[in-house]
Image 1: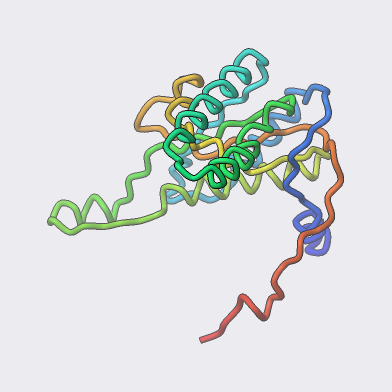
Image 2 (image 1 turned 90 degrees about the vertical axis):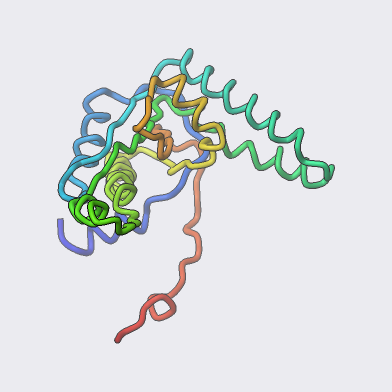
Length: 205
């Protein structure tokens, strides 16, 4: 593959919210995860784990947990118009149930050498390195899925019920759910969304 082929895959990938029925072979699932494991991570700690959800029963439990949490939170919204808008938007939290496979991406603890040394001397050190490796792994999954002919979506909306989802999936602290990625054949076509021009997002010093 040359640079043009890679850029083509990157540009053609879409976030899809409707999926066709039909199983995703285990061999293809493992190709997605293999691609994920080759993402860069801080200190090469590979602080990720992937829960493959194929069971309709489990997906229904996730759906129920999210819907209960959404309804519970909606009770705190006093404005009828805001509540209506919120409830309509919550549909974006649950469309993963259509897909034959959903990958739950789990962030595992990341402890950098810098933090350990500085903390020893009472120096606070804040870093986002713990999320960057798993995020890179997610992007690898999305691109590999597209290359294999599957549609996906990087879903963070379901995190509104993160604790409840973690309970269903058996994810325990200090591990933390980062995203859900539905995988399946595309059920709707998408035109390319407009992107900012390179000159709008670049600067030189």
